[in-house]
Image (cartoon, rainbow, N blue to C red; front, side, top):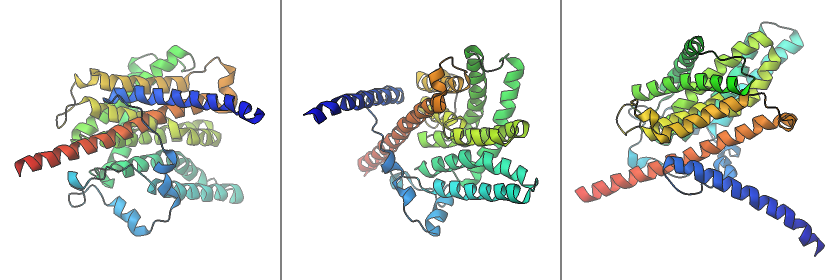
Length: 346
């Protein structure tokens, strides 16, 4: 009896947090147009990571997005996404960084440092971008297009950021007001570049928006981290590398999906799209996450084991999972409409 009584507080604690999670996903899902709780199954989603895959399976993923390899809408998979190739990319980059670090530490070769900075800055953002590439069930964006967005889009977003910084006083980023301004400047700069690439490639699906946003955010993160590491040393590289799992790549992916949600299908993005609630809610969320990340919050508890960063990473990924659910729902809806149309015509 005593054991049952002792378990009750833990059960109530679990139920409270589970209810809180359901409320959060339901609220965000309402922003996408569906009034339902989104169930998150992490182990199911990443179950393929721990399975064996041959080279042919990897190569098949890399050749999608061409005229010959883009599937028809009827052939698009609407089953839950299970990316795995990104983990191999992460492992490859991780091993490369380790070898460069050994070259630096064992042989005292300073020539290894630029490589360490580049690979270290690249590892997490690029791997995340590849994860979104795998999850793009429409398979209508090629590796060549993706690398173009990653490199050119990442640099253009930095250029746009510098232009906005020259126009808007931002402060040091430590106070809440300054952090909000910096969040607004950088997320707006990336948003403008994301929108331009979505227009250029005539993209219309939520998964496309997630991928293009992630690519531009990843490019931004890589070049920014490399720059900061050059200024402040390799400790900065190590800190920013693990934190990259929940910063620019994720924030930009959220905005890319929100742009698709707000724009009229098969029409270019306009000013009216950018003030639509479906876009503004996620845009403000991205700015809020960025601002909260930079803010030196006056709460000592948030500094324990980087609690502030982990909370923000969790919120960002919560939004990503909701948008993945919305992307799958969109694919199923479009398939159903296509089948119904063919049936009516037949």
